[in-house]
Amino acid sequence: QQRAADYEKRLMRKLQMLDADLASKREEVEGLQRSLNLERNKFAEEYKSEKRERETKAKTQEERIREYLTEVLYTKPKHKGKVGEFNLDTVLVSFVKPNESFRYNLAFRVDAGTSIAQLRNSTCKYWGVSSDNFILRTMANNKCQDDNKVKDCFKQGEIAQLRLEMRRESAEPPTEEELKAIQPKTKKRAGRKQGPRYNAKGVEQIQKFGENYASQLRRMGGVYFLLKLRDTKPSEHAAKINLRNVLIYTALVVLSATVYM
Image (tube, rainbow, N blue to C red; front, side, top):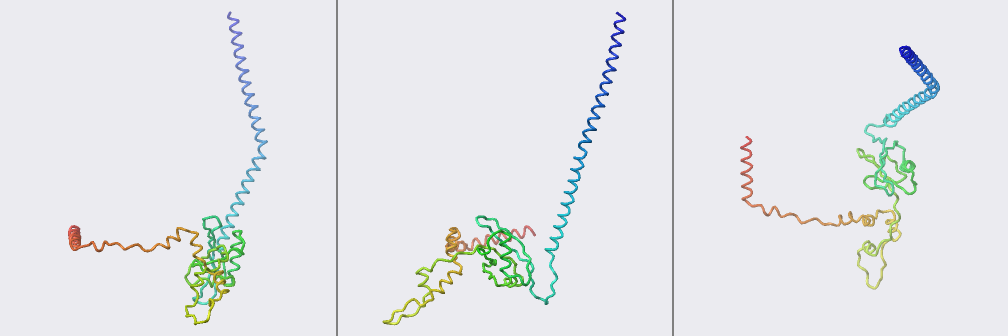
């Protein structure tokens, strides 16, 4: 029995040694596998790092270029003109796209020779609309003619802002009431019939190029009826004030002043 126990102990020690040897071999194999994986992924990691570095450099260069361009675009050039001469170098153009309510604002650089036609073509090209269907107006709702210079559309100290709006279609022909209203108020000679003394072609041109505010306001019912509202009757609170109220409030004012003093 003692010999069997010694044999069992030797077997157990040998088994432990084999387990330790197997564990060391397993760790060695795992280390070799990790080294192999690192060697395999080495080129991929280097490529990714180089790509990230290139992207970072490109982004930095783009930001630097944008900063330089912004500085150049918004730096006002030095004008060698007369003292007190009105110089305009930037114009703000507002635009509301059809079927939208958001107003877009964009600043354009201009010089003394920039015309309204050139500015209108640039704005329409930027927003992707046809220049034949849009016009430029001032904030006072005045139409800017294409032959005019942008500088001539503003006065000294006025905010240089224009609105790009859709060209309005030709207005409707004048009604009978409008034709009667524009006729001259002269007495008709007896026995002589006179037709309406007005230039129909001129009226048509005025209606074509003029502002038809009534038709535009009828499309916006709330604004149209708001403008038709009359002033409300003034309040009669002044007639209800008597001498007793004046004396009471005067006494309150005097008491308040004495308390705070």
